[in-house]
Image (cartoon, rainbow, N blue to C red; front, side, top):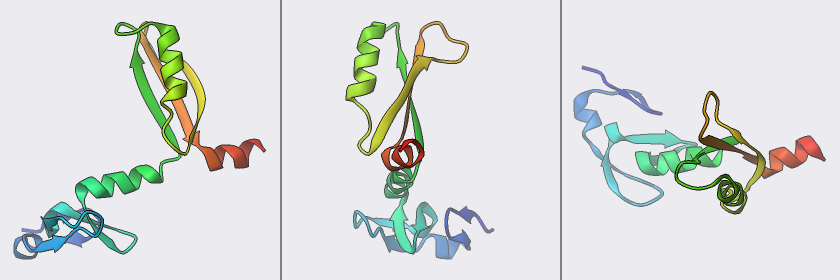
Length: 114
């Protein structure tokens, strides 16, 4: 049996069960539950954190039923992810109560809009 392992390829079960060390947090994880990113072995939690750093666009969703629209606008601006610029706050698609805040990597935004 050859399960697919993210970032590594196919390995047998015996090799997949071997313990490896996450180079970010130092946790000991099975190879089958690890990933390789830019030559580093990472647990899946740290792998997802690293992948997030490379995302160009982020969309956050807010619910108007739990807070008023003005509070959503203020939160969208004040709670922008570090390194991102707020592009727009708009109604969610086909929704009467959901708002979406769209963010773009600041350096991408500056290259495009300078």
